[in-house]
Amino acid sequence: MLLAAGRGERMRPLTDHTPKPLLEAGGKALIVWHIENLVHAGIRELVINHAHLGELIEKALGDGSRFGAHIRYSAEGTALETAGGITFAASEIDETFFALSERRYLRPETRDYVPKLIAAALIAKDPRRFAFDEVPALEPLVYDEITVPDATGLDVIARLSDTTTTALLELNPHYYRGVTPPRRTAIVRVPRGTGTSVAQRYAELPAGERVNFLEHVVTRGETLSQIGQHYRVSVDLVLAANPGVKARALRIGARLKIPVSAAARGVARRPAGRATRESPTVPAAPAVSAVSAAPLAGTVHIVQPGETLWLLSQRYGVTVAGLRRWNGMSVGEVLRVGQRLIVAPPLTDGGSR
Image (cartoon, rainbow, N blue to C red; front, side, top):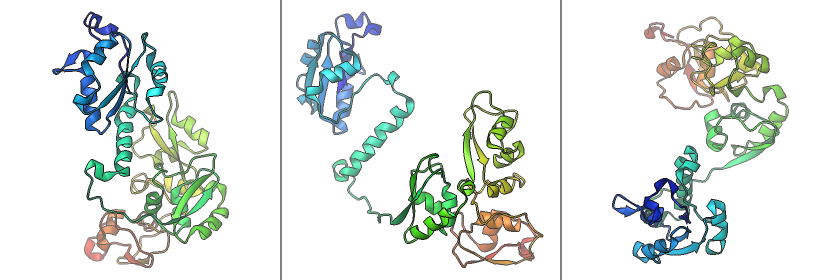
């Protein structure tokens, strides 16, 4: 449905004798640009409402056949505004329709993303119609499901599932912040065959260990001290979990990670240069203990379920980059249970950590 009943007050005197939709830009009437774009997108059934000089619109556009469209009209007499115009034309439209209106009433995210999502859905239903002939078929995801009663970090569930946080995010892309919604139950997908054991482990998990980090959005007038008091954590811990944040220069709308579990607070106490950069969320267990004496050159570690390069780097006091270099691993390569890892710089590495 194209809304074309407006008087066009801001375009007077041009609209005194010509309805605004028929004013030309780039050699075509404004409404013709819309019609041609709709037809190009595969939308050919159109309804146009009109009021001011509406008969001129019908005369200029006709039944739409010259554009490859079928146009029906809803003559209002007196303009009924957007909702009124759509309601008045109800007999001409079905339950699914587009209403093209002025852009100034649409938020930027609506203008930018909603049309793309609608287009993607239409293409997915009938790819060949839109010339997507060679779309590779993907294997369907296989998984079990568990139900959690409150906000829970996917990194925590990953540990309970003996898998990685990355794997959990792939199964649960709808939890794009890495945590389920607070104060309500949610369904989380876990690897096939682990549902029962994960549910049992989760039931034994203390409520305070369900989330390692919460996200806080800074509002006007807030200080780090106030935020820390609200979550019962120190300013030092908040700063350690958010490298680059300055206590005296908080930006409204900034998103801060707040360490709320004992394990997360233990990690946040470490120097900022070693913590949080490699992983946006820190697994709750095994808890990271203080770095012990430097391991001997060439020390080998056998990878256990739930361990990551980041956790091992914290345990042995080395960097993730160093672990990758000493073991010939590429960025993004996943650890395997039972894998042998060198966790201390070889003598030939010059002692670089």
